[in-house]
Amino acid sequence: MKFTAYGHPNIRSTHKNTLEFTKDLHLTVKGDCIIGVKADFALEKIKPLLKKNKIKIIVKVEDQTVICNANINKDFCSEHEIVIRRSNFLSDRTLGIKADKVATDFLHIINKLQNPNQKILVEII
Image (cartoon, rainbow, N blue to C red; front, side):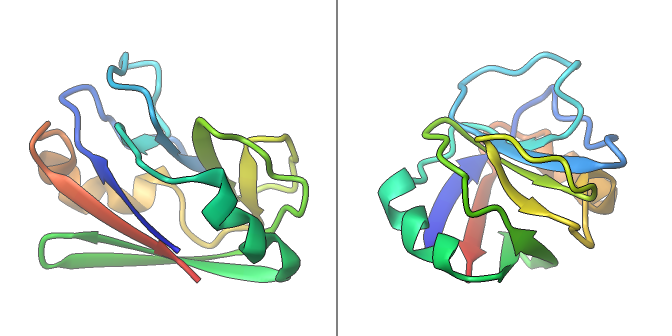
């Protein structure tokens, strides 16, 4: 399952326990786990993944790729945001837990993520 998100000037990528993609168009600096806005994912396309135990999230920004592995939350049902957590905390917007990557793992490309024209390609398998 693939989707696209975009950068935003307020992306900080400083959260040490989560990362998030949102369909929101705007972002405040308090959203320090968000690494992409204007995400165009569809819940219906995510639902088949909920049958798996583990997922791999491949995030591509130009020539940079970050791969995150996580356990699936079978109760994920958010149509608005996807949250990946290092912890075991579950909510309806949490797609992955026990993740090996979080927002701080994207600091090396923060200048790209802060560009509102930057396309972020995401694949979840």
